Length: 243
Image 1 (cartoon, rainbow, N blue to C red):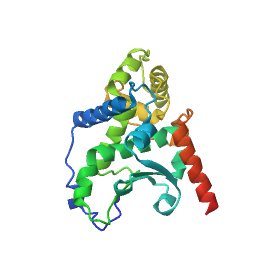
Image 2: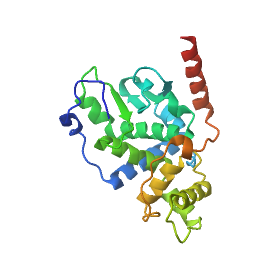
Image 3: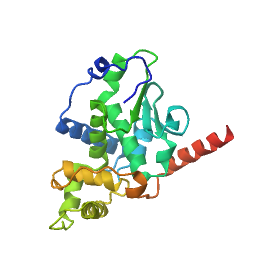
């Protein structure tokens, strides 16, 4: 993670406590329950993270290829003081990566917002996420939150139990094929195959597999986006062209 402030030292990151996987899962479940109460109906997969961000929490989602987002390593960011979530334009066309990026930023909102604001100066209102192998603790926490929000453990259990698991999962192709079958069974249409594989590993359904890294254009699926998200992304494309 990189913050727009001089305070990028280890002491800044040390302000954020370690959180157990169980605590992060519980936080994701609480946000889902709060959104269900707000929306008046239970959440079903695919989990509408755009609606949670925009309609429930009041964030705007901005697609950008300018400034720091000209760097493809910067996938997204959150500006707490402006209720703004920013997503790199390169992510926009990859539905799995796009939704995971938003869910990741919601993880920062739930897990880190209060500590961040208390620790930051008036000029340090951004958290910008960088997709690298060496992630600070809070980025790992936000990733775990995103997985729990998009792929709730209870719904994953139903989908995995309804999916026949091959006796041998020794190749990446077999692992990804099984993950795709679980995604179809549970209607997890807005997550990438890579995210599904890693979530199955975390939940113990693919303990024999290795964590996957893959480009979003290789392993993502593109369902129809929500109307609000589609309108906002169209607005940003038009705005950029008119500049």
